[in-house]
Image (cartoon, rainbow, N blue to C red; front, side):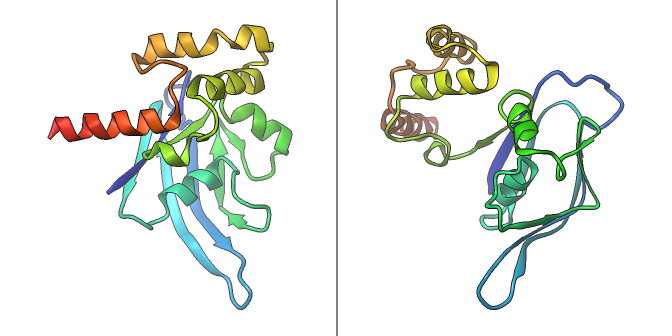
Length: 176
């Protein structure tokens, strides 16, 4: 089993679903015939975190990328309803989606090798995210990794992707 986690902070209305998905289908183009990779997905999300759990290859990451509109342009995404905070996601502009991603909604894959850039330190990647989504200057963004680490109690912001992967494997091995 693998889990994809979404973090959605500050839910305004406790009674209404923050994220509502009905009949989501994701189809990738091919040379001969297209077949859906994800078909008929339905769920609602309250507040805080949600994890999508399923077998390898069951469409968890594809579903997450469809919700965040991170799939290639040629991908066909259809849904009877795909709403975030009451707003339909599919017709939104790329600019509006950039405002939502990283600021109001994020996707965290279980394996960091799919989430982190191996040629940048983790601190550089957090600073880059702060510049893009929080509209911080480069100078102000230099403090973002330290603030993040204090909240997460994690490794140093100067750690590399390889170090984090090695450390997480060591921690996983010592937990058993």
